[in-house]
Amino acid sequence: MASAILAGVPAGSGSVAPADFNNRVQKYFSRQLLQALVYNLRLGSFGVPKEVPANMAADTIRFFRPRRAKKGTSTSGPRALTESVPLTPLTAGAAVGFVDCALKQRGDATSMSDIVRAIDLFDTLAINVKTMGADAALDFDFVCSHAIVSKAGTADLDGTPNPIPLGQTTMFNSNTNFERFAGVSNTLNSQNDFNTLAGESNSQAKMSRSAHLGMVTRLKGINGEPSVPSFGGRYKALLAPEIMMDLRQDQTWVTAATYNNTPKIGIDQWVEFTLDGCDFVENQSPFIETTGNYGVYSPDAGGATNLNIYSNIYLGQEFFGVPKLSGMRAGSDPRAPSLIILDKPDKADPANQQTIVSWKAFYSAVLLLTSETTDRPHGGILRCKSTFN
Image (cartoon, rainbow, N blue to C red; front, side):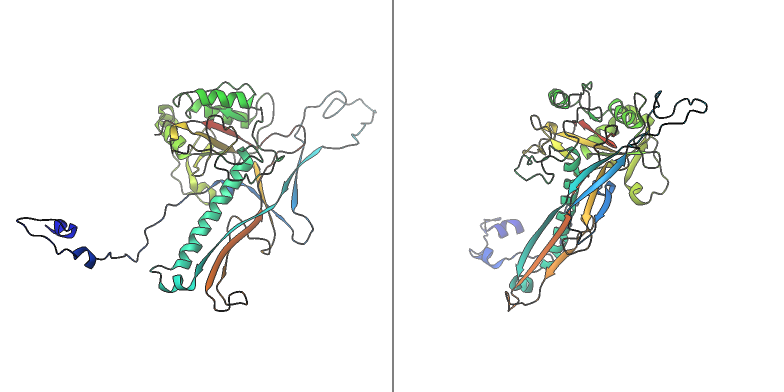
C-alpha cells in the first residue's frame, strides 16, 4: 500500500494518492559518508630513497655500483703467484658503473568557494584533502611501476604521458631472462616472447609454480653468476590480486605453501605467505598491458580482465630508486605528500571567496641498472594472464 501511494498510482479499491503528493516528499541525506574504495599501495615502499640536496644547482642524481666479483685469469684477479716476482697492479682499479635520474615536479590542485564550504552538508575541505592525498599516493606507485616496466617516453594507451622520459633505461625489451613470460620458453627476445604470451590461453599463461621458480632461480644466480641481493634471505614478489587468485587455487601451491603465523612488522606485515625463498605481497596497482601494447600501460577499456597481461614484479634489494629534492620548497616527499591549503584573504581574493588545495612533489623513479658491463638487474618481471573473469 505504502509503495503504491508514494508512486501516485491506484492502490486497493480505487484509492489514490493526491496528485501533488510527490511534490511534498523530500530525500533525507545521511550525514555519514560511506567509505570510499581504498588502494593498498606497496611498490613505492621498496624503492631506494635518496635525497638531492637543495640549492646545489642539480636536478639529476647519479647512482653508482661497483663491478661484481669475478674469476681470476693468468694475468689478473686471484691467480697463482711466482716466488719473488712482484704483482703488477691494475692501474684502473675496480670498475664502477652509474645510472642517472632526472627529477620532475608533479602535483595537482582543486578549489572550492566559500558558499560551498558554508552550506555543504559535508566538510568539503576534508573530503578534498583526503581524496587528493589518495590520488598522490596512487600517482607515486604508478611512477615507480613505469620506471620498472614501461617503454620510456611512451604515453599510456589512454593518452596519459609517461612519467619516465625517453632514454631512461627500464626492463622494457631487456632481451634477458630477468624478463620472463609465463608458459613461454625464454628466447631472450622480449618482444617475441610477449607476442607469444599474448597468443596463449589464460590457462596456459597463468601463474604457476614452475614460472615462479624460474624467476626465483634467475635471481639466485645461474651459469655461475652471483645472486641478486635479497631482503634478509628472501625476495619479494608483488602480484596482482587476479594473479594471486590463480596462485591460491594451484594444488601444488596449496600443498607446498607454509603460512607464517608469527607477528610481522614493517614491510613484512604485507606478506601473504612465503614459499621458495620468496615473500608474496599483493599489489593493487599492477602494470597492465594488452595484446599489441608491449611496454604500454593499457588495461582493457571494457574491464575484461581476461584480456589483460599483468607484470608481476620480483624484487631484490636496490632494484629501483626513488630520489627526491630535499626540503619542501619544490615539493614534499612522495611517500607522504603534504597538502597546501590556501584559505586566507589576499590581494587576488580580498573577500576570501575561494579555498585552494594543492600538493606537489619533486622526485622521480629509476631502475638501478648501471653502465658497468657486469651489472645485472636486482629484480625481474614475470608477465602472466589470469583466469579471473
